[in-house]
Image 1 (cartoon, rainbow, N blue to C red):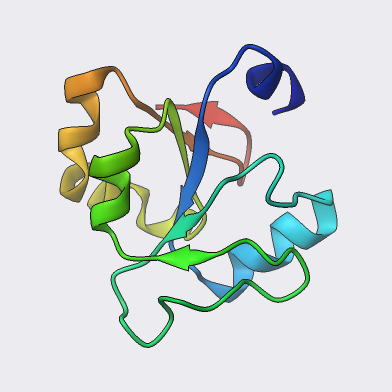
Image 2 (image 1 turned 45 degrees about the vertical axis):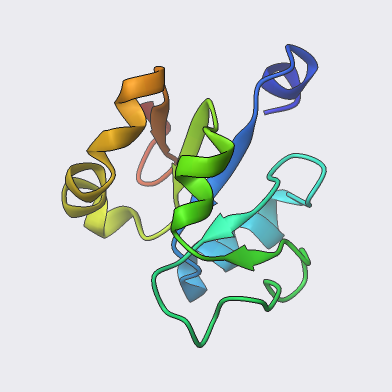
Length: 105
């Protein structure tokens, strides 16, 4: 992730799920590497992930910011999420899943 940021690429995440938050905290990921986490749930929006303090925003922010990479935090839902966010491919955005192994989708 550090190399990606050094290349000037924008990285965000999708899904403010507890297991994804645990992964980010374990890895020491902070807002300097992931600019925001988008989530469909309005009750989570406007808040921050515990520990990492990454802001949680509305899903529409992805289309506005056009990130290069989106890390899917609820990795068990990757098929559904990539289908819902298919519009990301219009600008060449890619999806990343870190569990059970790191993969670029």
